[in-house]
Image (cartoon, rainbow over the protein chains, first blue to last red):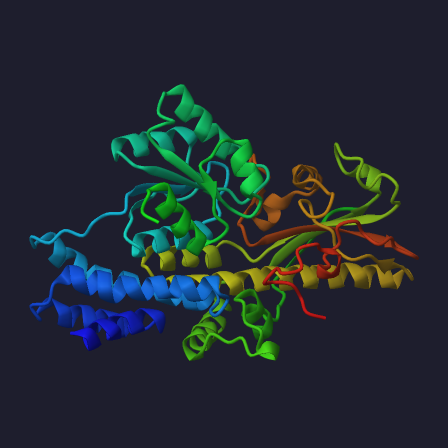
Length: 215
Length: 214
């Protein structure tokens, strides 16, 4: 059992998608608690990936491979989990997208993948997302947090407009807002009254957990 | 002068440069392993079919840049927009949509290097033209870098009929396709050192993972 969970974690750290998928498949017919396999196996692996990233031990490709392996394992496990009486505790619901006028995609997708890999329920709205759509989707999904990416000095102001619109709709105290993207920083987040700034996918997970009170 | 359109030229995509964008530093032993190298190899072997390098440039007096005074003191400036076309980024989006993030990230980096290589090619052509008249060119400067405002991207697009190479500008001054480069170079006997020129040496972000080691 311990060895099996270790192998699950190791497959994620090694970014071994094929291995992670195979182990997830083995877990299905094993009678093991799938929740335990996820939490003490695969999620432990992705947390380790985050730690290695923070310590500068690994770089973007390994982070991506880890996230991809996690996704493969969860694609196998999620349907089985939904059909069982076990329920994975969600860390919270996050609506994420790149702000209107901006079509940068890949950084935001990586943040969404890491949030999801770490146990958040993530709705990725894509790129060029209008201010109102962020809020409509957050409302419809009863989201805890909106994550807004902006990669240009000309589009980052859209992050502020989302917050202004939340205030206007009297929703600001119901939903947290986190911002990221090349031109953003802590000072910008503070200036526009966002709840936090994250500079990369790993710190975005830490920030989201903090905002959800699950750090 | 009438704008010059160039297309159908070959570019060389340096593998080492792709690896640098992906955070690899062989000189310091930083290496993400075999699977990354396989992904880079795969992306490089298929990217030829996805890139379609094109560029357009014109040479004019600095005062001719519409609505801008940034180059007013310069007698001759070449303004250029170039692109590798939309196919690489369409494939990147398709890959990431299928959850193939590593392949997406790697192909995206290959596309960025290809766009720079396209700008290098255009730059060399402009240099060659200048050399025929015994003139030299400065380093490239691009809107959004240094103190040249990104809003001035609009001025370059007003000057050049970029529709001829399939590049347009969004209202937020972002080029579509994304894998496009716009730049200016000063042409003179003794060209100025461009403000905001493309040099890691002048940048304060000394721990940037993309910083070129000297």
